[in-house]
Image 1: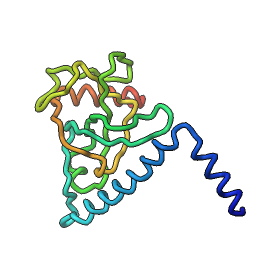
Image 2: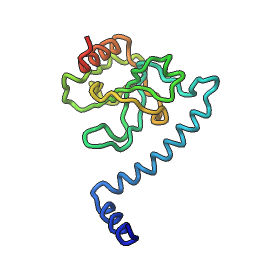
Image 3: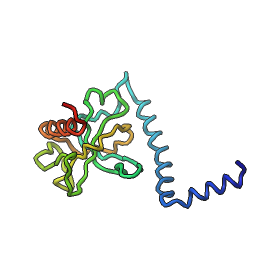
Image 4: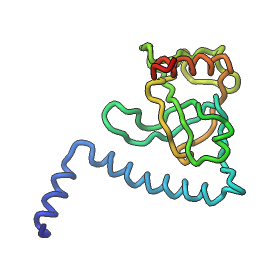
Length: 165
């Protein structure tokens, strides 16, 4: 490919609808990658400096994703075991949404489900079908914690979604 063909290809990409948003996310990914490396360098005897606990609610930078995948900054629930969270550089989360529509893949969150902290909009919902593994560099800050009763309901919802008996 010569230089003119290369420039033509680049110009075609730049004209795409979401180029600026995608480019900005590309730059932000470098920042998150650096943050991840810094966190890993701060491990002491294999213990990660960020140790979220199962049931914690965090503000999370989900980034720019594809299609209907969750994007941007949202609250999410830590569902990975607390012991694994103390050593792992990643954790498993379920995003929280405040949209009114409740599907059978969602678990409703009410004020009674919050042990510590608060959510801006209640009721909210845990979108169990969008469970995902994230690097802890995506965790912005802790918002609160859910009750053990809610976490048991959420675990049942996950099993139902995954058809686990």
